[in-house]
Amino acid sequence: MLVAFSVTPLGVGEDVGEYVADAVRVVRESGLPNRTDAMFTTVEGDWDEVMDVVKRAVDAVAAKAPRVSLSLKADIRPGVTGALTSKIETIERYLEL
Image (cartoon, rainbow, N blue to C red; front, side):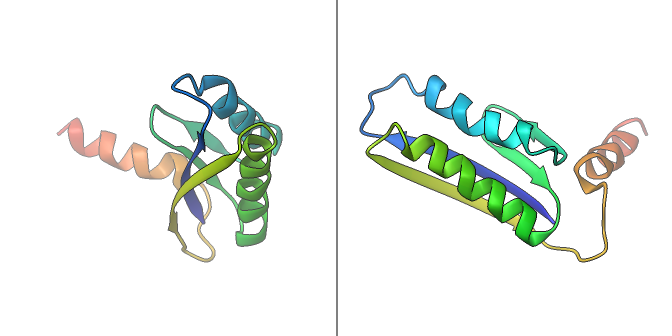
């Protein structure tokens, strides 16, 4: 499955980069395929692995923030691996036409 999620600390002011970095650090240290952009971090793995990483990322932010907002979107396709890169490669192929 692919999970795109965003963790936002609330009640800490406008500068949230340090808090978000704590969440991204958890994702990167998980060893699961992942990609972070300006809006979301996407992680690929099985249900339990991915949800554990999301929970730990939220917990990392919650350790420093009084409140946390989580947005999450999932693409669940059993038996499919490599979707994190293959979806982008497909779009790039069509853009080359």
